[in-house]
Image (tube, rainbow, N blue to C red; front, side, top):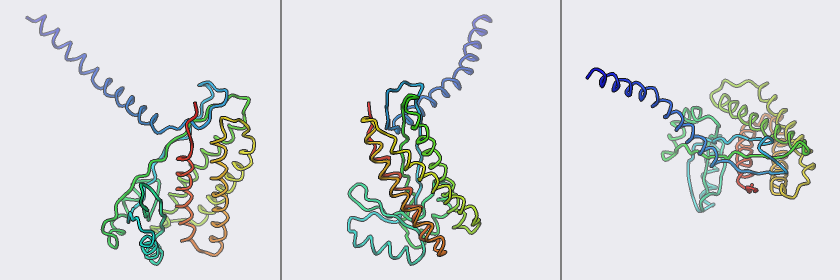
Length: 260
């Protein structure tokens, strides 16, 4: 009888130890699968797994104030937002025009502003826009891809820094010198990316090259506009250009095709 009790206690003890381990493993497996689903294999050049590089996925958090099919009505909403100095961007998605106002890369920041927007737009809510990650595969022969990979990583970090700045600007705790640093870094990154794109001469990377080139041209023009508006003290236009830049990156990623 005592022997059976000891065996039963041993089984319970083993299960007690195993359950957290199995739960952790299952969570990691689910997380891996979710991450895998959001990954676009954008470049594969004579590659093996040792040469894989990853650009992380992320989420854009925005306060959506409307979804309309009539662009004439969209213009009226945009005009109202502009008059109240609320930054905005319109994205055509699912056969409708989604009207976004405040937009950041941190959900907590956006939640802090939701109640204020709902005072004028009672149906406003937080919209989460998923931006897929990308995978680049190439051998050491195509060393220039390392520069492109690093610059895209730096661009994502720069967007996070700028997102933080605009939240601080909105609540009145910003530092002007931080924004100057962000603009200078942004310009340096896009200039370097634009030069390195010309080195891509591999047929299987044409889709990536052409879409990256189109995105960089838009981004470079945006940086010029930001510099001009900043010199004039027009911070509102600068913030709207930040939103445009985020969604230009989102559109760039969505145009990429997975290569085999």
